[in-house]
Length: 85
Image (cartoon, rainbow, N blue to C red; front, side, top):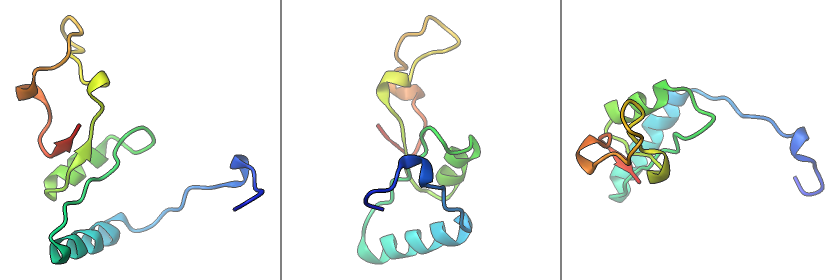
């Protein structure tokens, strides 16, 4: 709220299964595409959860590199499915 400090905020937790279901249903009705924000503070399972439901996640090209090789940017054929970069 206006005048409040960032340290006075909190994360809101909710039933993610129910929320994803509602968002997906409403997107389908509207002919829209859902892009989930799965960067940073979400658990590593979120990317798989979104993908398994046919929902897009997000990736930042800068961080999409070959961590097991020379660190070069990943070629497009190695990018994950269902992702908006």
